[in-house]
Length: 271
Image (cartoon, rainbow, N blue to C red; front, side, top):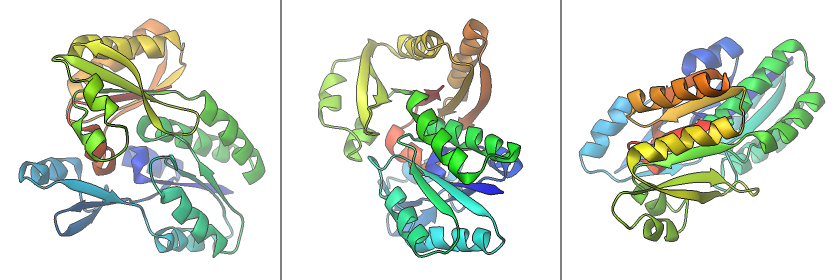
């Protein structure tokens, strides 16, 4: 059987990951002199409290050894591995996984999802469901490389400072959102990098537009991730479900990695 491995930037609900047999390798989040494993040492509530203390967060990709330990454990049990990392355009996590795979025996495939958060999570859960149906490693790797091109991620950010400060998009984003009340909606380009899709005036109109983008795509399955705005994310989810009859796979609070760059008030939707 093929086991699916991913990293904590996928923002998967832990119960869903356990149900599907998905293994999550944590990215490290650095606050001051301390390093925490995303989702293990640093739950979302703790992260917000530590930010309130004035710490500026940063992230660090998992080491090759972090992945190798997981790969060895699985291959020693006779399992094959498909590892789906967050976009290599945003992090060196995929590179770490590739190094680990080259040092481990057994059948292991590493795929750059070219996505993050809700998009990465949606891809990972779909792959795990197919693995449970009996897809072999070659079939899964081929399917994933095609499916990742079809998944669209849209992120409505309430504040662009964290993503600009973290170097995940250009200073132009700060300029584009410079006028009072302007909110930016981001998406991914074909290289797995983040780009501005639209500028919208006002918080609610930006969330309405986020909904429209998923409805226009006629998605059948949608995942949402948010940063400290569960009621607004729930509103978006309900509207999408009603208007295009999409199945809402999950609405999840973002982990520390995505929080570091998306900032409070972010709503990320993928389908």
